[in-house]
Amino acid sequence: MTDDTRAAAEELAERVRDGELRLHELEDHADADAAAAARRLLVEEWSGAPLDSVGDYGFAAEDADANIENMVGAVQVPMGVAGPVTVRGGSLDGERYLPLATTEGALLASVNRGCSVLDDAGGANARVLKSGMTRAPVFRVADVIEAEALVEWVRENRETLREAAEETTSHGELSEVTPYVVGSSVYLRFRYDTKDAMGMNMATIATRAACDVVEDETDASLVALSGNLCSDKKPAAINAIEGRGRSVTADVTVPREVVEERLHTTPEAVAELNTRKNLVGSAKAASLGFNAHVANVVAAMFLATGQDAAQVVEGANAITTAEVRDGGLYVSVSLASLEVGTVGGGTKLPTQAEGLDVLGVRGGGDPAGSNADALAEAIAVGSLAGELSLLSALASRHLSSAHAELGR
Ligand SMILES: CC(C)(COP(=O)([O-])OP(=O)([O-])OC[C@H]1O[C@@H](n2cnc3c(N)ncnc32)[C@H](O)[C@@H]1OP(=O)([O-])[O-])[C@@H](O)C(=O)NCCC(=O)NCCSC(=O)C[C@@](C)(O)CC(=O)[O-]
Ligand SMILES: NC(=O)C1=CN([C@@H]2O[C@H](COP(=O)(O)OP(=O)(O)OC[C@H]3O[C@@H](n4cnc5c(N)ncnc54)[C@H](OP(=O)(O)O)[C@@H]3O)[C@@H](O)[C@H]2O)C=CC1
Image 1 (tube, rainbow, N blue to C red):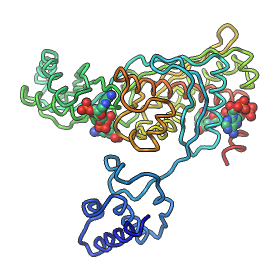
Image 2 (cartoon, rainbow, N blue to C red):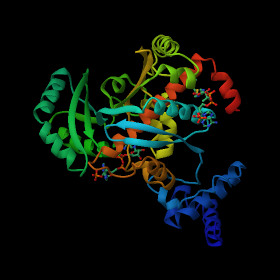
Image 3 (cartoon, rainbow, N blue to C red):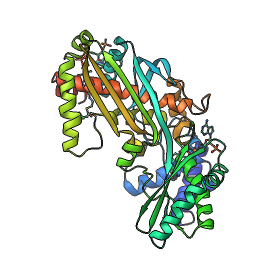
Image 4 (spheres, rainbow, N blue to C red):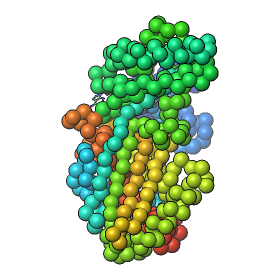
């Protein structure tokens, strides 16, 4: 921190102590780094907690202007790489290192082992099979007669809704509007092709414009722009069934000798374990995640590439299958609702942008949407590697010893 920044921070802090400024107004009176430093001084006074590490961040605070309010600094999460791994995707083709940020020891080692096994098997396939970001406003109607009228109006006026929504964006395209009725509440689930953006801001802004038309043209009243049938940042079966963001699958067939030599187990043992754990165990638990630890890879790659961390909730909505095939081990992972972008949100922050660069997917793709598809395929392959390695560690009874050795 320069002397000028320190002096500006001390002056700002004094003005907050005097009640002249509120904590969130400091950027109006100084640059963003001085504002963050002033907040650290005040929080240190109030809490007694030193914030030297939090204040030691490696980017200009103003770069995070659109990402955070009341900034005091940055939390740093260690980042590593797994790979290289050969991805044979629809949009990502070739060898890549996968960037992962985590605090869980043994995770990188595990994904790294999985990647080397995928490569020994000739690489992993990956495809995005469905794509679309949803926003579902809830409207109030008088009764079921009005509900039916609204549903009918929506069916007959899709083009009007599309025009209104798409006026707000040069990239987004409205692909469908699905009505759901519950008594006097009507939910319209708008789905957009958001190209390389994760698209939650884009879809929200576009849906607001469409809702104005609905209110102008029908008797329905908008209660909330998000009616939870979207469904964002909550565990929800609708995302597992209908998809949200990217629905992406990765798979591989690993030869028997590779399973035995590299994973210390057999295809039969992994297939049985997958059925009893990921399928039957998850069913008994009424889990939405029929997998071992897809959340680990989704969270670590989300942090490394600037995705919205709260969307790990639906990103981990995945089913892992395993079967013995021609003596080898076929394994697949299908992530139903992986919400990712390579533009917007946290993707432009310097460290996260470098994470995207490691994969070669930063910014807008050509054609638009192909970079976000490629990122989804990379995360699916990382998840496949993680599943292969952890299932094998469980089958060979190495889970606790691995974590005792690497994770404490
Ligand atoms: C730890 C291993 C990989 C050892 O596995 P191993 O086969 O004994 O290790 P190895 O020393 O023979 O090395 C094999 C390969 O692993 C990788 N590897 C090995 N060590 C490292 C390292 N230090 N750094 C980077 N990569 C490493 C590396 O690719 C190496 O190949 P090489 O490059 O040497 O030819 C294995 O036991 C394992 O994968 N265990 C599983 C750990 C795991 O997946 N943890 C995930 C978190 S568990 C959790 O959070 C969720 C849970 C469990 O609660 C969910 C549930 O309910 O199921
Ligand atoms: N508003 C909400 O309810 C919620 C917001 N969020 C937050 O939303 C943010 C993500 O929203 P998102 O809409 O993705 O990002 P941004 O709001 O950052 O918008 C991204 C914009 O980038 C432009 N763009 C440029 N090139 C491309 C391209 N190749 N493909 C697509 N768009 C391109 C588009 O502009 P144009 O539209 O003009 O074409 C697009 O709207 C995150 O910060 C997340 O945390 C998360 C959950 C809910």
